[in-house]
Length: 140
Ligand code: CMP
Image 1 (cartoon, helix red, strand yellow):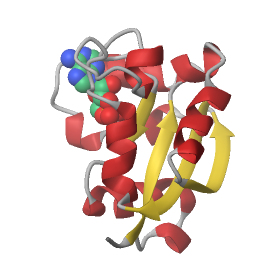
Image 2 (cartoon, helix red, strand yellow):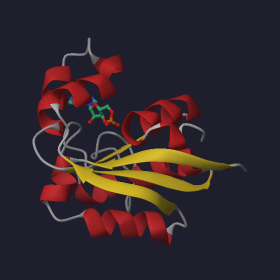
Image 3 (cartoon, helix red, strand yellow):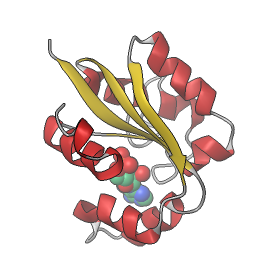
Image 4 (tube, protein in one colour):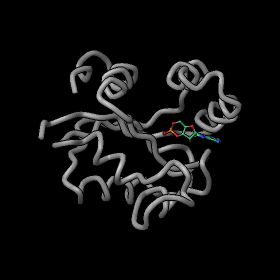
């Protein structure tokens, strides 16, 4: 299995509710390395650009409102099979459907306020890492 890099975001609910350390521990305990990390408040333009593929969905405005409502933590996770492993650790988009012990089951309130984002495939990881961390992390 190849070493990969993927983007993780601890969303505004995770930061506001004091779960940064818990989420980072879940990744580190699973053997994923935090290769880079920064806390930022996204601008509207950054949120809309990041989620551009969802721009026609009914929840797009609400999603961008939420993602700009407070600080987020952006992380580059690195490790074998990191893209899928991060998704497995996050759990289903809807916390009600998420497996027990996953980040979203433990901490998320709803599909919208669901604590974590993770790139869903290598192409997304390359785009999303470049979007927030620049060319150094384009190759995953
Ligand atoms: P994320 O993995 O960040 O990527 C797209 C986001 O859209 C997703 O997590 C959810 O937070 C959000 N989303 C998906 N479906 C809905 C929905 N029905 N209502 C609100 N937000 C949603």
